Image (cartoon, rainbow, N blue to C red; front, side, top):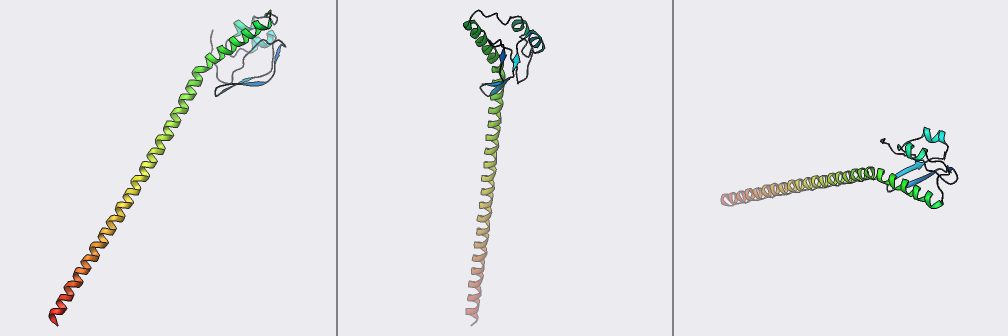
Length: 154
């Protein structure tokens, strides 16, 4: 029977010393916490986070006839854990990529808004300069007309 398990994951592993000291095993960006466990049948029956009770707890502590068998078993357990965590790691990576893409899009939108605002400001300055020039030329034209009228009068 399989079970869905949230991280952190406790894994029961038979060790040559019958205990497993506190340590953290890092798999990619997922940290898995291995607390100290005394490997007796009582604790094995209480802790079954990965649904491994059928396969692990029935193994007697002296079930490994050689160190090589123990390490093969441990490596298989490690590979099984990696296989179980790989979809989670892919999901985490996809979420990170989506967040980065969202941030990039937001920065691009902010940059576009700044450029549009700067363009509006530039258009406003150009319009003000054009109005000032028209006003100035109108005033100059009026000044010339006034001078001509004054000359004719005098």
